[in-house]
Image 1: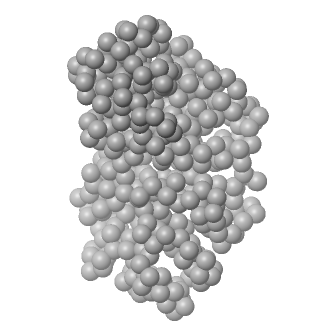
Image 2: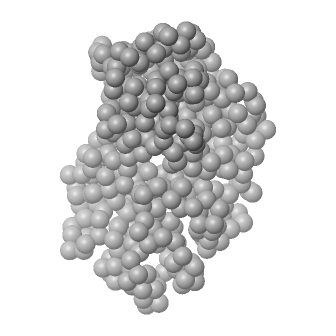
Image 3: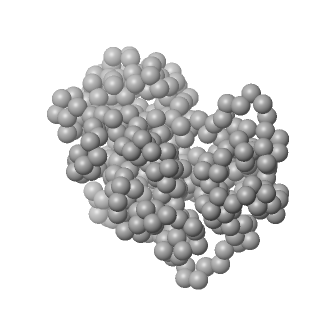
Length: 403
């Protein structure tokens, strides 16, 4: 199971398109038709993983064709957050339209994928809650014509393949409400940007933890920022940890977490703002998820916890240039990082650098390009996809609200 975020105008995550991963052959198409692929997603999500463990309270967009819709099987998915995304090559028939009406009457939402107009789609346009348009597949005048055509309908318009900030702003002007793509990862570097006092304390904490300074020094730095104390106690008492006893003091929390885990948490806090839900911010979500995913992958390869911890830090810092509007080289200078982490972040070198590249390719569903890396580290595709799903579930279990 993979997923790609769908974002609203405020760059907050609205939902995810769920992606089927096949580890048996090079592509799912080699052995599975659309019905079996979708059935696998649904069965795996429901029975093995639980949809809420994959998408939380957000919408899950799942690709469907006529066979899946007509089977009735998809109706065992939760009504409140399931969107059935009808693939662009599904033939529009009277039977399909009636099935869609029936599904909608039960409370499910319908999306049309890669929408292009022909007259047969008229009834579906009336039914649809979301219409997805690939902006790279149309010239601007074609987009304007399509959007004018869709104005009378109630469906929310979703722009796909939004790759730059300019694309994003243009799509808002055109009337799109939702967006899918990686425009939010594009850095806007500000030379000589200043760092806030709270961030300075976090930088200092990160570095002192790296040096394994005495606990009195670490506790003293926390005492400089009472807000940070509260955040740490909220974090360690969250559902991510299963302590029967409540942690009530910073010293107790530091001992319970340990320096390595505390350093990971500090790395994430470095870029988050008070009151921000990490799971709703695409960049913070991307950073945290990459941290979990890279750590699990590297642990599987090396069986070395220290290297796994380094992988987590690479994941967290991988979007720090965008989050802080600073060059990655400048951020790296301020942090006491190992050479392996520095080389991974700046040059994509070494094990950590290659795993970083692998994770980025999976995020974009570029499955054909991962063979060289997984062969080098004796991994199978099925194992990688299994680890990816586990990372998603680990992330969703966390209480990531930065109070």
